[in-house]
Amino acid sequence: MKKIIIIFSILLLLNISSKSSLVSADPLLDLLNSILGGILGLLVPLLKSLLGGILNLSPNEYTDLAKDLRLLASMGIKISAKELQERAAEIAQINLLNDGDWTAKLGFNFLLPEEFRQKRRGALMADLAADAVEDKPREKRVARAKRETCTYKTEFDVRDKWPGCRPIISYVQDQAFCGCCWAVSTASCYTDRYCIDRAKKGLSTPNDANNIFSAFDILSCAKPNGCEGDYPYTAWEWIRKYGVSTGTDYPRRNGCKPYPFSPTEKNPTTKPCTQSCTNRGWRIPYNNDRKHYISKFDNIKGEQAIKNELQRNGPVVARFYYYEDLGAHRDGIYRHVWGAGGKDGHAFVIVGYGIRTCGNVKLPYWIIRNSWGTNFGEGGFFKFLRGKNECGIEDYISYGIPKV
Image (cartoon, rainbow, N blue to C red; front, side, top):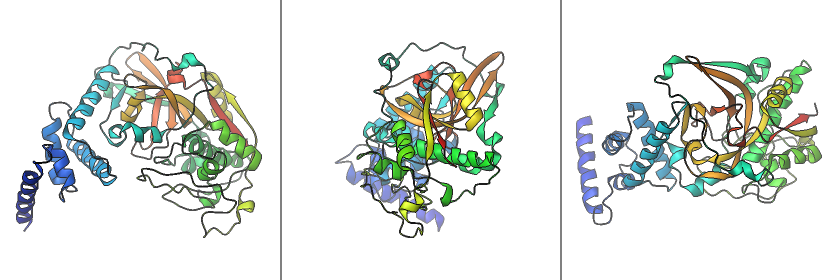
């Protein structure tokens, strides 16, 4: 029976392809547009034939890529065979340029058209020095032959110092296609620091909706068009003046004002600021729920100042100049080596730092929690070059002190 189904599927695909050849000569688009586009068993062999001479992918990597293409197609974003091959060649180029410091991946974030990649960030950078925008010459490193000869050592991680807050700090959110990293990173950093301040007082903090604070409350109320980007200090100032309500991310959909945008919603629009909970099942009125403030917020810069603040009070929000190659990052220590960018920014949360040793070569890094879901990097976290102000990451760091 299984063989009959496979034979029927192949014959049906050939029939569809022959009919569609009058319109399209693209085997990938033909398959994605057909009723068989969701069958990985057909998509994976096609990908191998298209990419085999460009990238050396494992069977699991081909399967993951097929799933990403299927997800993109379900969103109306369909990649042609030519486009896929061009993007694959760019991945190969990135892996040649980065001297083995990190590995690039052909996947969902890198395959997005620029109009959608832009919605995955959202930190404004106009207040920073103009010279930080320049794409400065890359520091040449000695290429290493094998990744397995390297060891990574965490020198400090806030989750180790305050283990009771580990579940909260380890949770990765997805801002989807709303350019509100400025709000998501600040709200999640406040959530982390709220838990840590309670821990300092000997109080435990359950990882539930009562203790998760709303990025949506900030992005809809602190600015009229929060999905179009802003500064983290806009979010900190809002919390200082008006407080912030509870609210989880989209999958959990709990608290007073949970995040309303699905990870696959292509064109979310900022909803109006309301003085009531958007979650009608939440029993605490908005004015009683939004009683979580900071006593002050501050900006710092420089590696040592960042390390000191992490050790004293917990995670901090960082901004950096975004470049296209970030979307390709899979593992290793990110530094910009390829692609357009350097004009606008992205914000995320620094939770620790460490050092990688490859033979006699040491490379320091920050431990970053991003807001692109768990499919990015290493479960939503990634390592970022430390101590060189890479892409301006050490120029603007912000944090708030919760009132607990």
